Amino acid sequence: MTAAAQRKESPSAAQPAKTYALAKKSEAKYVEGRRAFFKYRELGVTAASQGEIRAQVTSATAGMSKPTGWHYHVCDSQLVYMLSGWVDLEFEDGRTIRVEAGDSLYIPGGLRHNEIRTSDAFELLEVSVPADMGTVPCDPPAGRS
Image 1 (cartoon, rainbow, N blue to C red):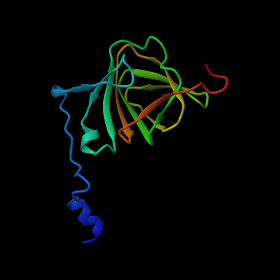
Image 2 (cartoon, one colour; image 1 turned 135 degrees about the vertical axis):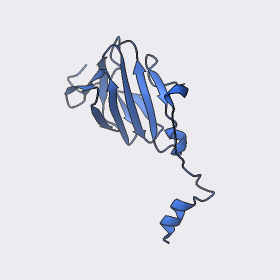
Image 3 (cartoon, one colour; image 1 turned 180 degrees about the vertical axis):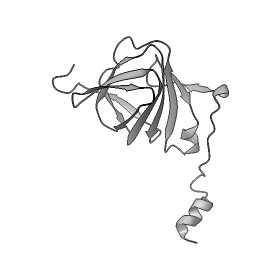
């Protein structure tokens, strides 16, 4: 057996074991998130992955009253999968896109964007790598407001 295979079978004391995470909808755990007007359901992936990945369901029952403002995330990757409703985002390349139920969107860390509109109600699954994803407000790209 190779050393890599042995590490997968029995983690050392220096590196805690990763484990599975089951998040039952009937036992939903909500946490604070980046935006006060959204609701964030924690799925337990952060703890199970030892901080490598974060997965949350974000929902709202009232549409956004104003854009979030230009920002970027300090992370490697962010993946959004729309479960219901929609969200409009504008990106630093000048494009505005709508992500609707059943659509996914990958955003690499550091890419400036602005969430500008949402449906009145929506729900999305968001996954980020690593789990600790910072949000940094920034100036809009040249020619954008």
